[in-house]
Image 1 (cartoon, rainbow, N blue to C red):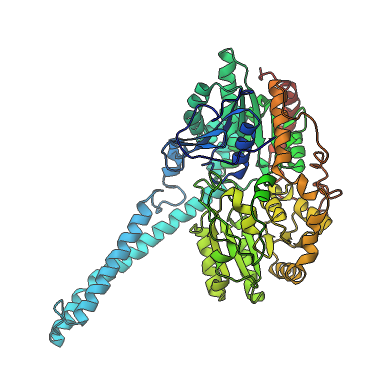
Image 2 (cartoon, rainbow, N blue to C red):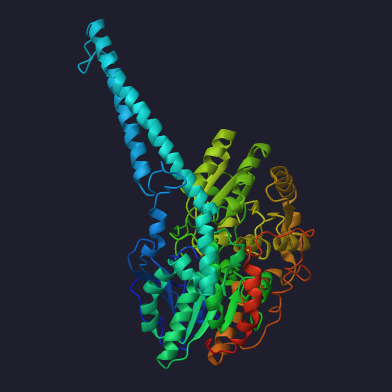
Length: 620
């Protein structure tokens, strides 16, 4: 299956830009701005190249509709108003537990800033009196004393007001923290709605999920798809409800659910005790509507089948780089001076892989040029989302123990609060000049851009989703032929040890990270040689994954596929490196986040019911 590399931003079309007969209309759904989500971009482009009429619907980051072409696919970003994300309970004052707290909202920040401004004004007036008045002419000592004395009472009042505002603000902060941890009232509400409504309880616990239905639903109905490809858990409900409406109108629509993460193992996106049980209930309600499930790793496929009682194993589609794009780019490496492209940043930030809305045409300065370092300077790179669970603190903390080594962080938002905190930490450690923070690059430039580094780091912490997958950056580093420095999360650690492409260190252990970095920088050729293993990188390509997805589409819609045969090496999803299986456990460590408390019984009771709902028919 070929890939069309040209991508022309411009007015949207109703279908792909060529005149070939289409095999069926596919509408893909994603709840981000598309521009940094390399997986959905590659899926849309490759499906269109295979002859499907593809429209990709995403969420506009600024509330304005926009559209462009991505190869033969059409991208449309929709405004998604989210009034349901702010229920009245979030604006109530905690009168019983913290009666002095401000009402949630902007009031606390406004009051604190007003008091700061007042005290600063009084400080300036006192300095003016000491300097002799507004005209700068020094008055008598008595006049200056009297002017200063007149400010004594206002200064005391301002200081008292500052303390009062600070107290009320701290009370509010404590109330917000308690709500995030789950107050007795919140936990009781979760238990009550789960008992009363079961999997429908998300409507009361997290109604914000319906904001996406109101934004996407009517557009999806107008497009009249033959197949809906819903990415991740938020879009699953949107696709399922569209399938129900289509059947009521006399049309059959196939629904593919692309599960990027294991929801029980996700760190909640909002500090609210209701978030996880609501989203898990939403997922459980709509999984039976999916005609097929796609996911990112064999380990996650097994977990999904066990959790939801799926009738068949989900199709594994790894988020690997496109081999054609990496072949077409000039070979790069430390000191080659091959220019690469600085990236456009995504507004949504949901996907961890760097990328832009379309492939870039012109080349721009490379990684080393943007860092301002020469070819002989040791450079360790991290690319992807910046968050505490990603372990970037370990990389910064290690710099004082790695003299001469520079670290580059290629992240979605270089000015985000967490990233600013990393910069401040580097300044306190005296290594700020060796920490470089760069924005994302277009996804077709990621591999050559990264290849200028000496090593690629994946210092992530032990969370379920980290344990079970080979994540995007793993494949990008591999195609860049970088020696890896990987934390001991289960799947990536097992694969790295088996292939010999890098070193494994204990997660959150700075000293062990330093050891691993020193090892790969001392003998880089030893680790790069692992990529010469026949067939290894060929299996880790998007082209191989796209053939699996195309066969799935064709099976669901019963159309002929382009190349409906399995090529040698396609079976490498379960055995990715001729021996390093994804489910190989690392020293028998317990994995956190396998499920939510109290959820096991509900899953067990519903498993048989879910199996009965399969077979291509809507749940009754």
